Length: 334
Image 1: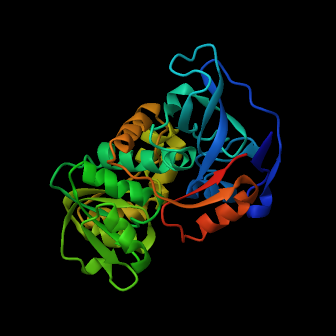
Image 2: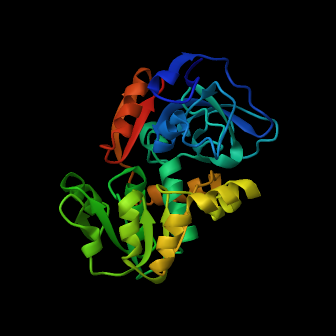
């Protein structure tokens, strides 16, 4: 079968489309014919080798972290799915494998696709949708009436985060360019800051929670916008010790590494009187089922920016890496 394989870390020339053996499902696996695969920043960061401190699988490796497709076969211990089911999934951390004609995924990471979505839209949901849900519901514990600040609301995770925060009852403020403002307002955002013309540190509101999708100076400025005791969760800055302990089942060594690497960010958060948390989301079929329910109830809309054929996956990744995407980028697999 055809797959997009990482042979060495670095630039795009370290990965290529090639023929690989078809995967064989284990006892708890589904063998899925991939119809569409979603692209995420973690894909090019993995290719660049930026995640080697966290994930170090053996190369060559089939890349890709989310997919939508049809079940071809099931392992002997699978109970919730059967051949012919239309499913979507965020594959296991460190295993990847979604950029291929077929993939094996543990059934606990899989859910039935929303009945009102096609494969293209369904493939855009798992990683970004799970990230937003777990950050806002489980880490920030967003409640009705709270004010939530989300940076980068027009991106893949941001488009889900705005809608999930509104579903949880929050008043939502986000950053976007003029090009992205109409999109984020259509998703229910209450206030929009044009980051190209306005310094977010000048915002007078104070927020109960912050969800950072940008990192860098934007994250530092967000600390100053929070109420005392608030939490800012980031998926774009530096992992901290809880990332290793709670998200990665990491060793004491990895926790210590993150302690030193994130010291500056945590110190700046403490000076602002807020808590900093970096989230590395976890695959979950149960959480995907929650997202599917919201989609079927028309409470969550999926935004797909561009669709590429599988043969142009390198171009698709380059477009995503450019930072211009509004919503998700996906590839269709023949």
